[in-house]
Length: 262
Image 1 (tube, one colour):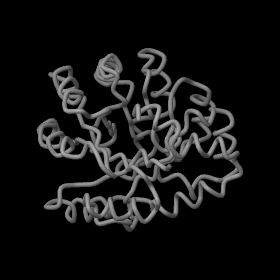
Image 2 (image 1 turned 60 degrees about the vertical axis):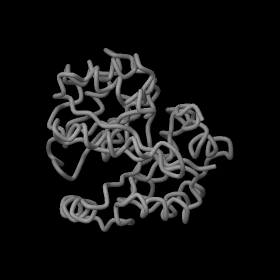
Image 3 (image 1 turned 90 degrees about the vertical axis):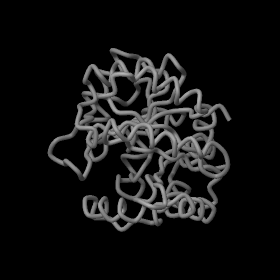
Image 4 (image 1 turned 45 degrees about the horizontal axis):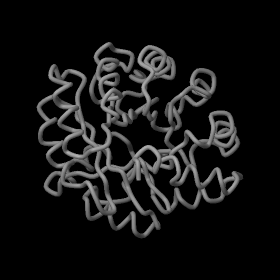
């Protein structure tokens, strides 16, 4: 069994425009068309059992429509988390609704939400999400949108973890995209999950394996960040890593099953 813990899809009517806009920022050719159908096709072709879709809310006004769309996908090959913005004053009400709709977590993207991850608003939001038993996935490290102004550095993540002690926090991109030396110094060994989104094939194999061993394979989640990385290609890369069968099993699905309570 394989679970991809970090993917993206958009409503059909905005998928092309959204991908065109993001492609201009990321300078990467997407591997799907950004739709639910496209993600399902990619998931099946890669031999993946479940893809977790993570919506990024960039404005408070988007919260209701994003979560209404996400609530449609709570079974089958794609399971969607909900979204929220740190500027939402009624964040507790929104998080309760996310849980009541059957969603098991939320996605945060500090760079697109124009707030730093050690902001008190994120701390309060993550704390309450943890009280509700929700998983929190956050984009960590460098993002092409603002490469010189990182909104979730390893230091910021460490501060939030120490202050809030969240039970189910996932730092995407192995704890901090392109800041992996800092992740090793600041975060490896802490009580937090890392996902492998858009990292496999970019981070050196030596550093990846060292981080898995140091942090613990029980806290690493297989992820691609599809459509920004190929699902089949990422499965192939992790399958060939010099890790034990048990470590690969944990990363590919065991840890995700535990978090998602499958």
